[in-house]
Length: 320
Image (cartoon, rainbow, N blue to C red; front, top):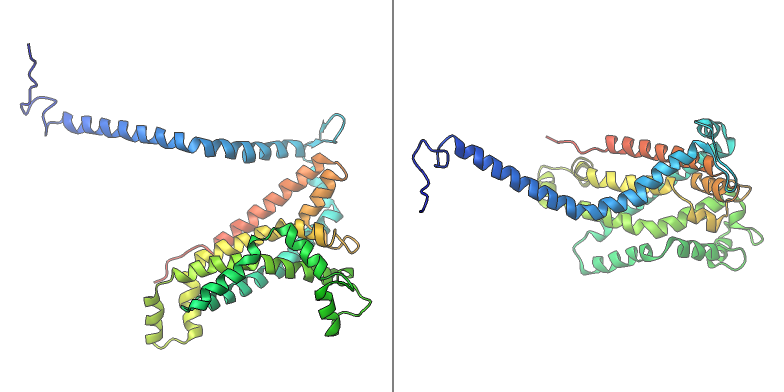
């Protein structure tokens, strides 16, 4: 016997009845729940990787920082003593001061040169693409390889760069570029600029290309000069890209290690030791793992605060 569905207006299954919207809502919830489960399943590998290689090491680092944790022997819980020691440590304060000086010097250098290169290669000529590739090529070279290359270029009596500086009278024949703090720092800044500025150029170029030509053309028709158009049109519209570039630059500078380890080895007289270099020495040369972990957490907090301040100052705002 075949059952007949009652589709009279009073029945629950009939369209237009009070029960139909409720059934549709339940079906929508089931579909949404199913999609959420599919999305969670697809994101699970990434979540596992983040947990395994970031969250777990982060928690372990914080746990180790609360202990006197030698490489061999038993560890002892000391609470926040390692953090108090880090604040009072003159060696770490000196390393942090040098790291901040390096960051303050190299950040505007990278930004100004990168912006100038981006404006230069933005022109719609065939040669611009060639120069984009040329400027970007050093980015493909490893930081260690670039450091060894510039270390050779600046070597006394054998380096081509040293010979050039000697010929123009900047460096004496019996001198050494790496013998002074500022000489060594400038060599590192030169290497990092050569290595990284191509990436900053590419990021800034993408931001410049996202600015509508109509807006710039309208400003010119209204009588704005190139400088006024750049200041009042280009820079405000480029603000999200500027925030990204500056956060990357400052974070990379605060975490600088490889270039100083290879090119200066912390010298002369330990004057070019960065914060990460100090953490490396504490953890893997002195084997004070608990104190080194506390220094790492301290640097992470400084980096998070600086990045948050940058994002706050450069946050995108609506322009009327």
